[in-house]
Length: 118
Image (cartoon, rainbow, N blue to C red; front, side, top):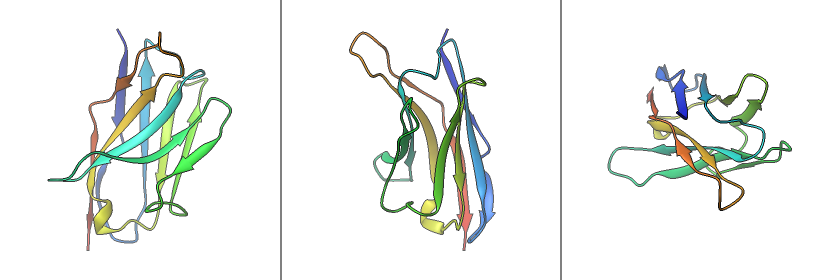
């Protein structure tokens, strides 16, 4: 059974930092693209950051320079280091495994809440 379990969310003041983790089980992290998405109340889920199996990263413009995505394939864990947090970063953050081939499955975590107070 494949599971992606996020952790590390919480309440933080504007300007603060948090590090999110996404632990995978039942699936290896060394092949597919790993991504973070977020969904704020009343809004659509939006892309935050991604990392490929060779470490190539991509970020949404809104988080570029503040967030850093990284992965530890040996631990099957994905991270999102978030700094200079803003109230508009408040959302549920989701880990997503995006398959690189059509015969591979995609997976989502259950999400972790990040709340940034002003």
